[in-house]
Image (cartoon, rainbow, N blue to C red):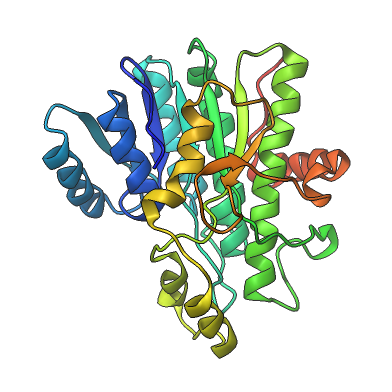
Length: 300
């Protein structure tokens, strides 16, 4: 397992940190001395998770704050509170997400649920937190993508027709990778001392697959069978590429990190797909995200 170096004095925000890879990331960051903000949709679950972290690390500084990435008003409220606190944010781990919802649902803002939660929410959160991030000495933003990626179709971006749960998930995760790389380009162009990095967990044993059915519907039988035979590693191992991207000394701008063997293994550089390297699509998607969310970059 990856050993997180000393993070004393740093403030880290981890979204979706009451379970799975988010919980493991929050636990290990807290154990390494960081102040950790657990940004969760359900505070009661967050408090229970915080209790487990404090049981392992009694002296840790861990806070729970509500954040629903499927609600842009919640994103704004959370970010404004963090910025108004006045403390620099050293690490933002865009971890939270939903996976392969069997039926099409929409967020409160009218976005297709997977794209809205996995991409539009983190996009708006990252931009709204930039004032606090850019106050830090060496801030990093790590956005969790996936080895499952599907093309961006701007003519049917939100699956108004032909919804496919697997491809909708893959599209949202390609969008996350493009977000990480476009933010890296912008940071470089503007001379920001900010690293924007992508990561993916491989095949981690978390509840995200089963959680997809909570809004209704059943996963296709073939998909359920595939999940049973796919090699898996633990949620802790799945969090390690994200933690490596957030804390290792040799991480590169616009880098992408995942398990060494693709689905499982220790953190290593991951190959970026041809779609993930498409700068024109990344720039167009960024512009579309600004238009749809109403959240834009601060003036240069």
